[in-house]
Length: 70
Image 1 (spheres, one colour):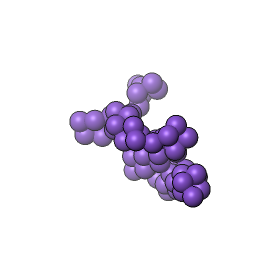
Image 2 (cartoon, one colour; image 1 turned 30 degrees about the horizontal axis):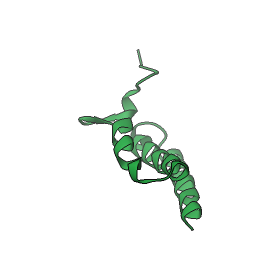
Image 3 (tube, helix red, strand yellow; image 1 turned 180 degrees about the horizontal axis):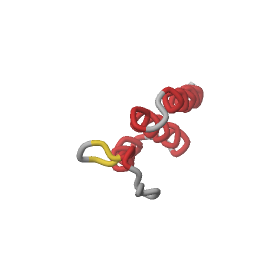
Image 4 (cartoon, one colour; image 1 turned 45 degrees about the horizontal axis):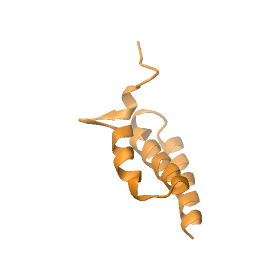
């Protein structure tokens, strides 16, 4: 049975993606942190979930981040 709360595609090695995100986004303002978190989430899960679709989602959020920083 799959865990719908903590799915395996968010657990890589010794760290969960959410824990990595928490550390990375500390230096960003809230809107930018949201975009960065989603970029990380989609890139991290792409090989185990939706592949290119997830990478395109990550790119969409990265483009939004770049616009916000612009």
